[in-house]
Length: 113
Image 1 (cartoon, rainbow, N blue to C red):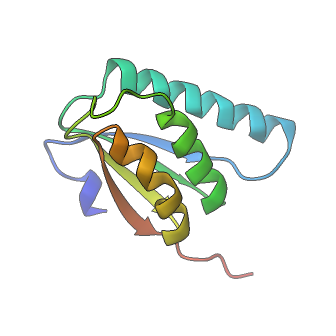
Image 2 (spheres, rainbow, N blue to C red):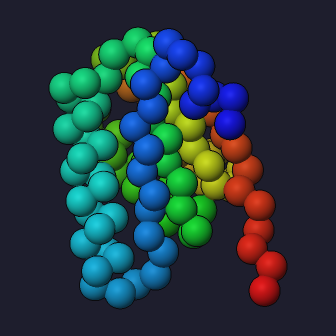
């Protein structure tokens, strides 16, 4: 992905687990907490948060929760790459943009099976 291969960009990548198993739910909570801490402490220009997972809706929910309560326009020039669905990106966009970050989308190819 060209977005993560820029020599001036430091990506923080998170893979969101799908499903309703207790372990998956707990891991999603942990990811939200880690991203929120990252946004509070480390979000500087040149950093990128990359979020993906097998379930685009769950992935969008994690992204929205992570950006909840982030002060408005507090992280300008931070790029957020959401690898999921266009619908999920539209759900997450208001929270990401309110914080001042740029949301980029890569559509996740559906799994055939």
